[in-house]
Image 1: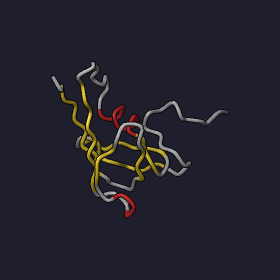
Image 2 (image 1 turned 135 degrees about the vertical axis):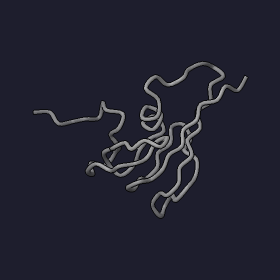
Image 3 (image 1 turned 30 degrees about the vertical axis):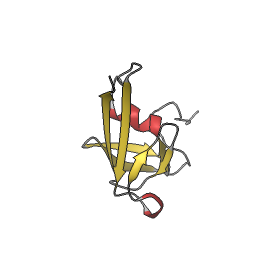
Length: 94
């Protein structure tokens, strides 16, 4: 039986158990010890906004020691811990 769940946007890297994080005030469970920018966007938006002028910003806080707070950049990853908070906003730069 194949238990590889890497297609699920909520799955992080590293093979650790599920961790509950908060994305736009909603609890989400992710696998692993870190998450990517794309995973957080997928958790925040059922249908992410698109377009050449759309900019998605991810701010986080209450993280572990190596990244307590900050902004997650496109193509970036961040270590997570239980109840870490992610605020995801989409803006139109036009």
